[in-house]
Image 1 (cartoon, rainbow, N blue to C red):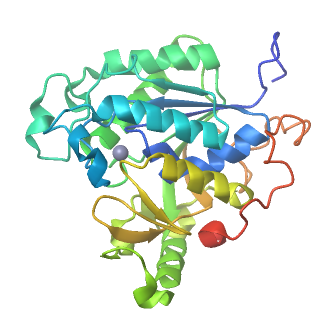
Image 2 (cartoon, rainbow, N blue to C red):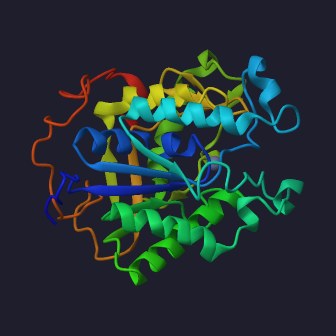
Length: 315
Ligand SMILES: [Zn+2]
C-alpha cells in the first residue's frame, strides 16, 4: 500500500453515519486525529436529519412540524463541524436529501416511502459501494447491528455499511477492516462519575445515565481505542457547530432531552470484519504508518495539547 499517483494519502478511512452530528459525537476525536496525521478521512452521512428535535428556541421554526427546513440547516452545521475536525471529504448517501430521516422507532415518519428505513438496501448500499470504490479505504467504521441505540436510521446505516462492504468487495475493493463503534462499560461509568462529582453545578436540566449512551459493551469486547485527547478541543468545537442538536458545556454535552453526558476524547471500536488488527491503538492495524506526522497537520493541530483540559481525557 503505497501512495497512489497524484498524492492520494496512503491511509484512508471511511465513516458511515445516519445523521449530521453522529459522526462528531461518536468519532470526532478519531476523525480529527487521523486527518491531522495526513490520512484521508471520508464521511458518508445517510440522511440530513430532518426529523431532529431543535434545541435553541430561535431555531425552533426549522423543525419538521413547522418550516421543515432543518435538513438544509444541518448541511451547514455539518460543514462547519467538518472544518473544525479538518475533514474535507464529506458526502450524503446518494446526494443531499436522497434519503429522509425516518424519525424515532415507531414514529409515523417510519412509513414515509422517502425515508431511509424504507430504502431498498441494495440500492442504498450501491451508492456506498461507489464511494468505497472511489476512495478505496482500508478501514470502514459504522454502528453495531442495533445502531447503538435502536434508531431506525442507525440500524439501516449499519446494514448499508456492511452490504456496501460486500458489494464493493465484489466490484474490486475489499476494505481491510470493518469496525463497529462502542464504548466500554468501565469508561462510561467513569465518565458519569466525573459528571456526578460536579453535583448541582451541572448546567443541564438533569444528568443522563450510562444506559443513555449508545453501544456500551463489556470492556473485553473492545478491539481498538483511539486516543484523540490532543484533539479534544476540535471535537468540542465541532459539537458546538451542531448547535441545533447539541448543547455543550465544558467537557459535557446534552441532546434535546437536556440530560448531561460526558464528552469522550478516547474513542473505542470493535472489529467485525477482516484480519485481526493486532494493534490496540490504531484502526489501521499494522498497515501503513504516517510518514510525517506533523507535515500535513493543519495549523494549530501540531504539537497536540490544544484545549488540553477539555473532555477530561475520556479515560
Ligand atoms: Zn443519529
